[in-house]
Length: 262
Ligand code: BTN
Image (tube, rainbow, N blue to C red; front, top):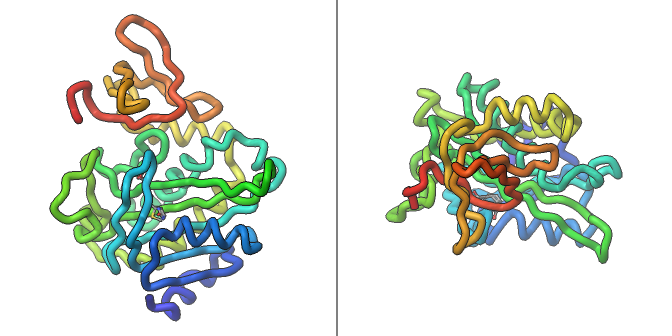
């Protein structure tokens, strides 16, 4: 990890402390341990390679040096933030990544509920938000973000559960991952101030992928809902209307493009 270049790129961002690692299991795990050890708000963990990168719903996440950007940002939520629906922190990250990609590279990313960032209906960024508790007190929140910069970021030899892509495929210029990180951190600071606001929901719904389309949401291995996606509610749940007219609020699940797609 080129720490000098990293520090230079982050000079105008609101980071309070940083751990930059060549290799680790999972940056989220390091961040969770750091919260136990007294990390401050806006402490950052970044790694070139993750050997045990974790995704949502127990999936794994591959991180390769140079091809991927993988980091975890620690938030020590204010009382107001702690009172916001916890399900809004992951889409907050999705909004930050999407707006950063738009601002820096003039791309127009969409957000697959709840938080995957898509370019042309393929996933370029995954987000895993985890909370650390001290008894019944929320001790901190870890925002884990993985972005595919180059083709080498995609898992070799395996097919992903949802079609995946990488950013440089669309930018037609090389992407400096530390500059992208700096922009995402600035956007995170901005969206943090908007969590749960009208603007937050307006922008999320504007970018919501597959709105008005028929999707299948896998709630668990055994249960799926098929229907038309029509929005999100104020707790961050996905709203889907099935063909029998029933409206479903879905709190946890994996969205697939069509009823038959695996
Ligand atoms: C997903 O799409 O399922 C979420 C993937 C989240 C990956 C990021 S990379 C940085 C952080 N560390 C992890 O172990 N996971 C997250």
